Length: 196
Image 1: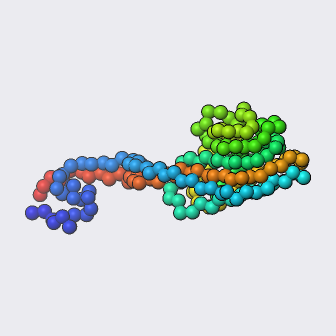
Image 2: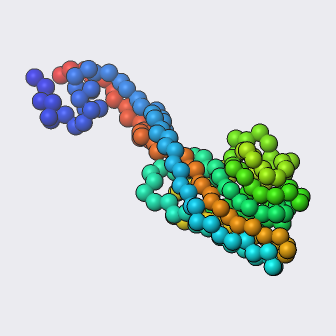
Image 3: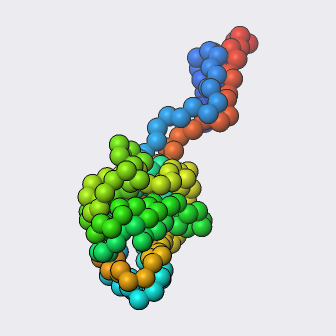
């Protein structure tokens, strides 16, 4: 009579004792990944001075997210009477910075319901003010992928010329995170054994 189930060392031992088969689990087998979508916003308006070139910043704090970044997009609403004066970038918690738009739109006005997303079909470089819709940023937001999403995210707005100004009305940060549910990195081989 063989040992009781409680005496068998784990599942491999149980299979070996009861079934007598050979199993090998492949390494790095991704069984499932949970992808979650999160959205954060800052609706505190900030003035963009017109008297001289200036730089403002607005921060969104992200906490308690699980997993790492799979995708990032940014929504913004900005009043400005000469959009090609503006350079706008996003900085992540690890000080990684992505340039969203760099002096586009000529003498057009405003960024209205503007989204920057790597899945867009139109580059912001070929778009016109008020940039209503979804656009590819100047640099890829995938630079944030696989990083920890938690911490401070900062939107920087630089007005590089005098005379024209405006204000940041609001902006939103959209993050998708992925969390690996199970990954087997240690293959286990169970060899058959003849009964005694």
